[in-house]
Length: 412
Image 1: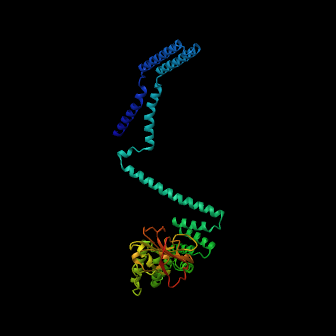
Image 2: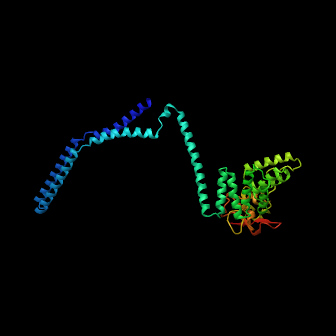
Image 3: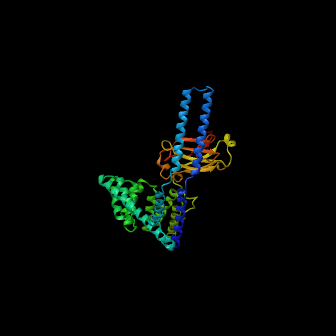
């Protein structure tokens, strides 16, 4: 009841603010004053014209023309003032507005608002729950609609391997494992020996078989690793298959070798180390895993880096040193990079896939690379004027020189 009293009071206040200015009586006195002023001005102008005529400053025709214009102008001014004084606001409009504002305001609030929340605040929580459920239903409808589009695409082109793979991913997200296996199997039939597809199909087959990697899933993983021996997904699945066979040493080896490949994923690295610890407890003969700084990296390019004696005065001990490898033909960004400081020089380092800036762009993916080292006073990874550097081109990433030595001896 209090709510509606407050609403009624506010509506009344709004109506007063709108109606009072409209109903206000026009100022007729002001209009009369303006008429008198117009008449006085016209008289002054006529007197001025009479004086000009007497002094022969203007002739009679010009005088007559000016008097005629003055009379016409005065008549128009007086007519406008008279019309303005007689006009008054349409009062029927005022009462129409006064009726519509309350009706429309209350109607819109009853339609869009929820006044009952004032008496029962729990209704607000119910409304939030309903909205959340509607959002979840919309998301499910979105996935289902996407699946329908993929199905339509495959009806038009049943040989579309990418479409079958997308369909499999979508079905996995909807937890329809059996249908997902069918879609991945169709993808595999179309593309053949593709390691990524083989690992995905193996994973789906294992889920279909209550997580067991025995049989076809493990065979797919083994063939996939022959094509991509350093694929983290394949190594994870191979380790899982070995662990299920109680071959703890093989599982330990797969997961241990996987660590450098996921070095940039702290959460996954921690989980793998936890699993390696469990394997060690199951088989005490397994060698303990080294700390994160001692884990051997993937085979790459080993080199030594030093600063030429002639440039030692041009670099401070705290200046950044970037040691990198980039493709001879390909993207300009480094495939692998390490960051040190001048005080670390001379230094021996190894660049490998574990040092990749982007997981999909690795050193092992390019045969010929450029090896370089650069000193930056600003610490900016992008080369700038004044940097000290050196580069060696046409290095075979798979069979690099045994004694690769870089001496920073140039100024950019």
